[in-house]
Image (cartoon, rainbow, N blue to C red; front, side, top):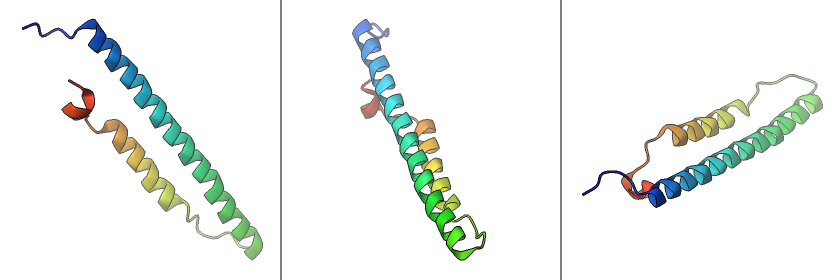
Length: 83
């Protein structure tokens, strides 16, 4: 058997990689939107209380970012890769 991937498989792999990258970048845009909303809520609360409080959005944004980075670094399984 030939161990070289067929050109159609390589093209499909590249298309899947592009789709995965697009989805991952979309997730980062959602993260940025969440950061803006949570920061606005925090800022309005600080303004209302006339006091600079602890930046609470740091925890949820940090966890969310860690998940996105883990998704990017986690190896793909054989079923997902289509190989």
